[in-house]
Length: 369
Image (cartoon, rainbow, N blue to C red; front, side, top):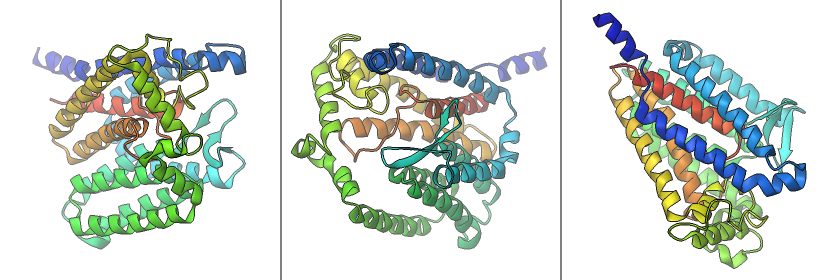
C-alpha cells in the first residue's frame, strides 16, 4: 500500500504550477484571436489564420510538456553535449546557410518549409541544462578560473557570438544574463562574474555606439515621444494602449491600437493590447499568475536533493521569469526595446514550445517529495 501511495504521489501533477500556465495559454489564445483577426483577414483572407496556427502550437506544446514530465531527467542530463552541439549548428545555420530566414535586417530563424524555428529559444534550454550539470559536477573546483569558470564562459561566448552575427544583440544579452544568474547560484567567484560583466558591458557599449540605428533604438525609450514617428513609434503606441485601458479596459475585442497602429500587436506587444482591452484588472491577473509561477519555481528548485536538479529547476524557471519581466519592462518603456515574446501569451511557436518544455521540466521536478 505504501508503494502504491508513493507511486501515485510521484505521478501527481503540481496543480499550483499547472493551472497558472494553462490559464496564461488560454489567455494568450484569446488575445491572439482578438489582436490578429483584422490583420489575418486583410493579408490572408482568414481571420482565424494566426489563431489556428497558435492553437496547433499550444496543443503540441502541452503534449511535449507531458512527455518531458514523464521522461527521466537523467536522459536530458546525459545528452547535454548533444544539446550544445545542436544549438551551435542551428545558430550557425541562421547565418551561414540558405535556410536562414531574413526579416527586418536580421536572420534569426531557420526556414524548414512547413515551420520556422528560432534557435535562440533552443540556446536557452541547452545552456541551462549544460550549466546545471557543470556546476553540479564541479562544485569542488568551481572557484578555480580554468576549471570552474572558463569552460562555461567559452560555451556562452560561442552562443553570444553567433547571435551577434545574425545580428541579435538583445538575444546575446539575454543569454549572457542567463549565464550570469546560473553562475551566481552555481558558486562562481564574484570577482570572475564582476570582471566578465564589466568586459561584456564595455563590448555592448562599443557595439551600440558603432551602430547609429542601434543607438537610437536603445535610447529611444528614455523619451519615445521625441521621435514618436520613428524609433519611438512602437513604444508610444504601446503607452497609448495602456493609457486607454483604465481600470476595467475597453472590453475584449474593442481595442483600437491593434488596428494597424501598434506593430507586433499579437506578438511582442500583446501585453499592451491586454492592458487596453482588459485594463488594470487584466494586467493584474497576469501579474498574479506570474507570481504564483515564481513561488512554485522557488519551492520546487530549493527542495531538490540533487544539485543538478536544483540548478536545472532554477534555470528553467528563470527562462520563464526573465522573459516575462523583460517583456513587461519593454512594453512599459522601462528598458530599451527588444523583440522578446511574452511566455505562454505571445504568438510564436518556438517561444511557446520552449516555455512549455520548461514547465514540463519543473512539473517533473515537482514529483519528488
